[in-house]
Length: 296
Image 1 (tube, one colour):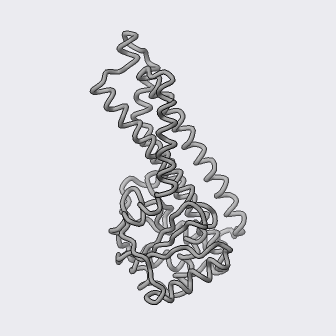
Image 2 (tube, rainbow, N blue to C red; image 1 turned 120 degrees about the vertical axis):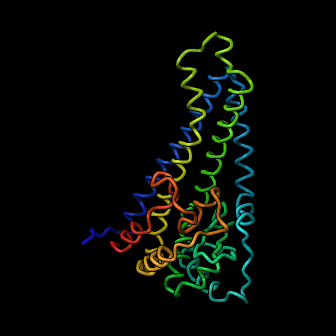
Image 3 (cartoon, rainbow, N blue to C red; image 1 turned 45 degrees about the vertical axis):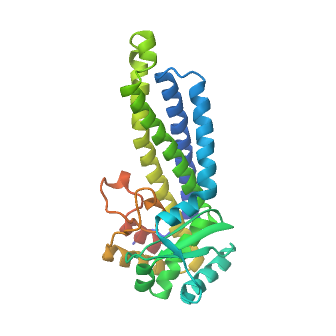
């Protein structure tokens, strides 16, 4: 029999793990900035330009990221008269969580899935697919919605935005390094007549940094899913509803056509086929999530 753990122990453990992962991504970004500046002899211009570019990108993502994500996903605003059952479920859970009622959207997709987005509980949205609404019983839908409400209440949506900022910035640096290496010379090597092993390490680090950043981002996503599962179980006081919903989604195994590599980590369950195993997965395995829920 699986060892039973408390809701609060699970939540606190995952919060600690998530903070460690965010700190790792920040350190990776700073290391990539230094490596790029050293490899191409950019001096103080490199870190300065990198800082302001990151700042501008962060502001855009912070204030407009949710609108961009909803548009990319083909989400349409849900009207109360058309989806009264959905409004009833979300309103009850938002009230229980003591957060404002989020805006509701529906995605015309037969895959059972959902996601939350926004920058804070006052500026949040929940989107569900038609497949989810058609497949789930009330207690199962409540479990899924409670999971997404938990993402909002725990500020996971802000964590997700930060992950997008760091991964995007590091990817841009990697692209810049490739272009400089093949089209613009190799900076310090050209000036010093060789540059030495440290310069080569710096170049390869910048080029590989986007891969490392994606791995950290996926790990961050998995930790936030565990946390939202635990918090949803606490909110509904019925872990079996969420566990049953996960089992149905796993058995259906329908890819979410509205999702892409950028938005995949936001969804309730992995919307894309697994390609590169656990380290590249945006979500924990469904069986593992069900096992944890049933141990609570």
